[in-house]
Length: 100
Image (cartoon, rainbow, N blue to C red; front, side):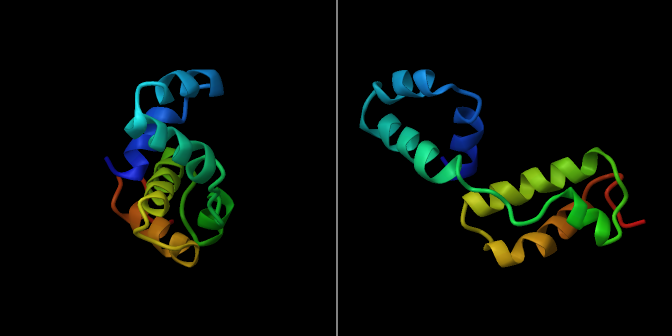
């Protein structure tokens, strides 16, 4: 699976639960290791405030755009310097996400 899909499945699990998943075998262990080392520590360089400052309207579309941006970062499709542009494009593509 893509990194974002694996993170989506593993993110809600506690460390103890991740240890149980890792015990399922080498592939599961590899994904759990990536969750602990790569995925959980990754933080976007932008926030909803940055999107609002760029002229977007407040609302749930901001969270969806940030989630899409995080997925793109996890999958290696964008770098941290591309986050704002990516999130603004994501906002433009969802209902209620267009700039004010």
